Image (cartoon, rainbow, N blue to C red; front, side, top):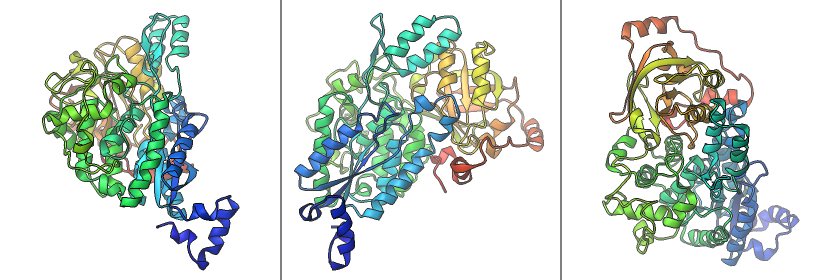
Length: 553
């Protein structure tokens, strides 16, 4: 056992004495040591139940003959961090989580790991750590929040809450209406109830083969979630016994499967940051262009919020991620020969799986669309690419040309939107919000929700070198690369320039001639960084382009 490095032989008597100081017995130290990485805290609704999940996991580990050892990982609530400097600290935690978990796992020589994440950067950060450490590892998330229910019986969620603020600013909703959303949109613990980033990544953890069935979809408050946690604790012991490791599972083919399932589910655009970053840790390079190739042949089978009016509990009732995968196998769109943490192949896992609700998971021959949920656009405005959740874009905005309304920060843009300065047909450009320029690549849920709440999501596009929450809908195009801080074309856009968006043809162009752009570039002076000290300053120096997953170099 790997843990023999810290507990076997006379030379390790000092090490054992410290285990005894912790209250462990000789009998416990004779068993495999399983690190239980728990992201419990009291500030993230998706994490407030993870102490219960950890206890269930540890019970499963003990039942199967292991000794569980719990240690923490941090997590940020993107909703609470939204709209202020706190959002600059969201994406950057992905690397803090990966680094600190790697350090703990290597320092203490665990034989296996159970990761217990739930929210946006916590899931990919722990997947990155799993790839680095590469000891037998399995995931069990905290589960999604239940959908809310408003006073009039309508179901609701966090994205509706943000849009309610925009509706209030436009005079379409009174304070009592805002309070109705405020009190009822988020009715339980768990990751927010739509196919936002957290739930996208928990579902894609299943798709990669790193979690048992239901990891992404069983609601946080269901007892089934505790049973899943116990089975996860038991299964890590089987993985240790068979020495099945993350890099045995997270192969290049597994990432291609995950991108395919991403397209079918209609996941968050943030998956286009996180999947390449996780793959990078596995020694696999994901080309952003591959997303369009996969999208062209993958039907979109699900329209969960914000793309539609269904929620994660509905997806679970329909059969979950595995039922989506089963539909995809009908056209041979997945490699089903791959190993998973069940100890079986995908084909074996899917043998008896059925789609229980074809209104939630469309049959593959009757999809919402014949193309996937995400598109990568390229053109003169984004030579290295940008990303849009096309499944959440209104048909009339799939192609759009309009005048640029240019802002050098999210705050300036949201002020203009709330003041009614953005009109139908406009293209809002928010720059200097990229990984380096932000620094930290903030999510733009406030401006996109304001536009949607004011009823302009079918008439206004928003483009940024920052990123979007999975709760965003409309023609919201993020991850523009190169970013403004690196002298990308977005830095040279001026008020009133015409910008053409053509999502079906994967194009985005600034309709300004090359000579004019060259003149602007010659006069350009980068905007000074917003933060020059602390972790964000270090991050800005090390982070790569969003097109490469914003990995640290």
